[in-house]
Amino acid sequence: MSGLHIKRVALTGLRASALLASVLAGFGAFVLFLQFGDADGLDTLDVVRALLILISTLWLAWGAVQALIGLTTRPKPPAIDRDRPITGRCVILMPVYNEDPLATFARVAAMDASLAATAEAEAFHFAILSDTRNEAIARREEALFAHLVTERAGLGRFFYRRRTLNTGKKAGNIEDFISRSGAAYDYALILDADSLMEGETIVEMVRRMQAEPRLGLLQTLPRVINARSRFGRAMQFSASFFSPVFARGLAMMQGEAGPFWGHNAMVRVRAFAESCGLPELSGRPPFGGHIMSHDYVEAALLARAGWIVRLDDDLGGSYEEGPENIVDHAKRDRRWCQGNLQHARVIGAPGLRAWSRFVFAQGIMAYIAPLFWLGFILASIAAPLVAPPPDYFPEPYWPFPYFPPSGASKAIGLAIGIFGLLFLPKILIAARASLSGQTRGFGGPFIAFASTLAELVFSSLTAPILLLFATRSVIQVLLGRDGGWPTNNRGDGRLTLAESFAASHWIVTIGLLGLAATWAFAPGLLLWLLPVGVPMILAPLILGWSSRDSNSMLMAVPTEYAPAPVMLAQERIFERWSAQFAPPAAAGAPAPAPVPEVAHA
Image (cartoon, rainbow, N blue to C red; front, side):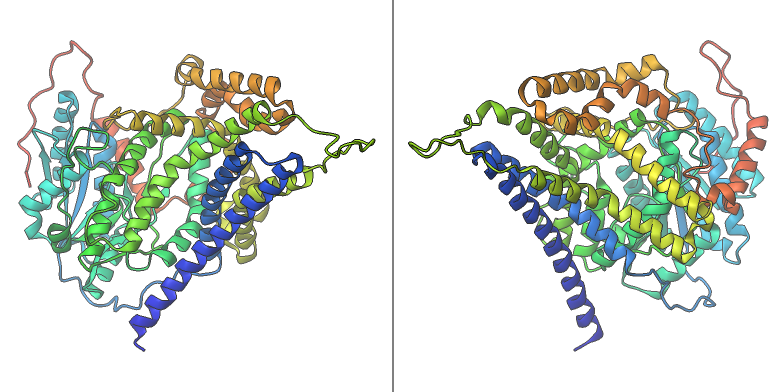
């Protein structure tokens, strides 16, 4: 039996075991809930609620199993010859859309400086691919690009192109560059406007692509940096402390049909050009038109063509920034929701690998899962209205009443199991990090464990709010509403109380009505639903509070204690350029002076 065949058998066994464990957990919750409902006689609503619990628990268990796989394995770099010189040429693509040019071009300059510290800088070019619609921002892009070329002596290595029409959004932007200029390059590193990567990491990625001719796409695990708000720092801590373990589990299960998250990933240009032409789906958005979540589709198309798509979770030096408040997060998540639900039109495409179809199904499930939880809550509130009245004298002529046994122990056991699936993986990650010494970069074992508890409390507080934002997104898509491609809000994300209330007043209403209905129809559930309903009622306060800057030592990450060299370089360049370039002209102010002609790809 060949080594490749053994790997495939082992991968199939791992996937089957993970799925079986998740199904068993869901089935266990289903049976336990039926036993709880049977205490006073089963009815149709009990069975419906049990099915909703089965689906929801299966989904939670799938995430927990992924974490357990990540906890029991270790990432290790592939064995390659790192003394071998780079023979191919790589272009670093940064698509931008109405972004702050100062921050974007400072990142490009910092990455170029980081590459210059290696011995392979001449193998890399940069291309800024602008889809900016705002003319003032576009003029500023051109001015800063000219400054970038001059400061970095980058003539012939830096290119800037602004499209007249932003057809296909980011995917169309990259496709346009590949079709026009891709033949000049062997590899392309695809970034977002907030991406930042160490030069050594970029060089190592090219080495790995050279060492494996079948490798079509190499994905890194980006760490969130530069977060300031309470919400942003919670996401940053989660991405640095928990995500590597979950990503390790994902890498183990994905094998050679891994993920593509649309940025901080390198592609083999020939493979991408041959395999990743995206169709325009028939009909109107949200389910028709251009494919929004193109990254998962492109990964599936590469795998279909026989190319390896791999997540190398051992690679460091890969960074991105995230939203600073829940509202901006919800706006971005709305776009992802539409893109993932749109995959229902793609999941049946001919020739796709079974695992790729399963990944599409996972993405769809990730967004419709809140509907199952919400359905369970609503069904539980309504259950007393349709339940038959208790019969304390089921036996004719029997003089003593019969009291059915309490199902409280079953309900408590079910609740413990569900909360365990949510919390236990993170507690285990903190325990392993403490034992292995990985907590040094997070303030030490005590601070790291306290940060874990703080993150669990914070996520529990914000989960009901995020659940309703996600539910609204799904309903909007199902009703045919196109969310479009809104501009990402970067920088200061502080929300006033008025802004918070405007964004969440409907959540407050739902929380008040939900608790009132529970009090009226199912008072026994009120205590259980307070952790869900109270955060909804307090949503404006939570949104505003979580958007404020945090100075706490909790949820600190290694890049706060010891920023990466490329982060320091980007900060220095940004500060220097900020002093050189005035902010954009206000409305009615004179237009800026003409800028030098820029190079185009």
